[in-house]
Image (cartoon, rainbow over all chains, first blue to last red; front, side):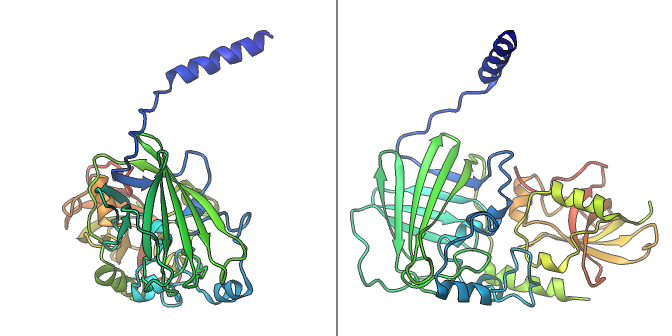
Length: 244
Length: 125
């Protein structure tokens, strides 16, 4: 019993020493956010896929499986740049959604009365998330980054996106999607400095069941987004690797 | 300082201590090895997607060889305190990293001790 009391006291003391997180402002995601996995969480795979590829691989359809087998990734460390067929690394295609979150750079949220802008440092990617009440149409022209609408659900910001083309990968390992992809993002600001992003991918052509994950972000008040140009920078990089 | 081709265990320790970075073409580098050089900087290109450093090896078995190595993106290094003048021609440095599999003198840099003897941060916080 004495041991238990000491442990409880130590635990209480430790908790008292932890700074209390500042509360999240209501319905405000404004700022620059950077992916940061919780300490000790061992989630290195978040740099190239959504769930642990060994423990929680996605459920693929036969179509999705065949496309995945044809993929030769580089960011996962499997193929060299002169071997990969990654559409971003070889052609500088826009990364699509939600692959854009794998680029190891921050993104910024800017709210306006009718549109919330999601701005990604990588390749100036910009998503316009309409919050004016419009619905996603049934026959949208396919876009690289899709069409997006958003709404507040309590203090969570929920973004639904459809109208994608089928030329991008879902992740950096080469999981494919079709033009019937639907992505739902739920941004949950846990406190002032921490944001949890729940992502759900649904695609009846590529995925046998929805593929879900949660990514973790921290606010970076002192950061400003810089410039990273895929066509001006990335395509030159293979020459560095290839030179003798 | 001698050029050191370290044992697999040491290199794995280096690799495991680094955050898993989504680099381009990492498959071209031998992640089981680590090599360290003392060199004189000849050029730094503060450019995307990876900052490039060029140097002449000053000592050890590789003395006289020309090498280069790559770091993360300049945006990330700038947020860590770098500028395009952090390394300049003539600066001495000690650099460690993962060598190219085919023997090309290119390094995926894992650690860099700058001219003033202090470790330079290789990513932002």
